Image (tube, rainbow, N blue to C red):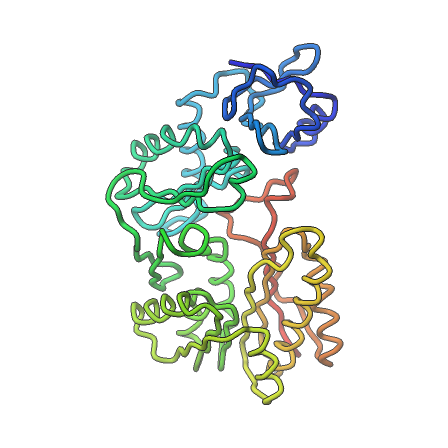
Length: 386
């Protein structure tokens, strides 16, 4: 196994509990091959761990373990089995969940999502790409899935010098699968849907929202109807608004799967819809705001804050007294404190008094590591308008 020498800064990164070591903190990687598992040592040749090495990314090393035992097939299989055992504990019975959450399961740059008996994987670094065949073999041995697909059609792979690609890796070529979530059936397009087929990180938040749903409900940025259909059985009516015709087509199919008759869909820009509806005096008892990320980079935070304030201002103005607002942000660069600040400003402008019922984050199958802030990206607030 080749060794990569790191500087004092790289040692400090490891001691801080973060698994990423940047290229600037690599002193010598001359013998390391792209995508290989390497020994991480300092200038005195002291061992600091084993990591995946990238020859392209600014994240040159992704730490796999501090242990001095080979990170071989058996070690990889143990990590995957441990991740699956944790899901059996915190997502028991879930037909769709994240089985492996990269850094959150000590397998950086590897994502494995399970949709019923179909698995979708993402290998987002040179190292995990090199291990892809072994990962597929391990998944087949441990779970006997009907199908394994890759959804490596993500821009982040370009940072690793890897092409975007998607397709079937093993088993049957199953593109669409139906899985139940919170008692509701959903169809997932594994090859063409968002992310790996759906937004699994909101599963627990959708369940939490049901405790407050009532009356006339609005689900803005509804995508395939995740929140809308989860709340439908508890509401008089639900309106789902989405700008994507393809997403709404899937939402309608999901509605048919469950036989709901009190849900309607509208294709529209959600900002424009909320403004027009507010001006028209529309009122709701439950509103969900689950927009796409507004701040993909730190430089976008200021404009993102304006967007979050505008959305929440319109929603707060349209809620009846005693109504519930479920509002989310999946922008890593926007903290919960930032989101609360935007909503507080919106509440003042709307002349509404708001109380916080729940402060939530992503589902537990997307673990958050205390020393890796990048693993905490989703914020979900459940609020009551007095």
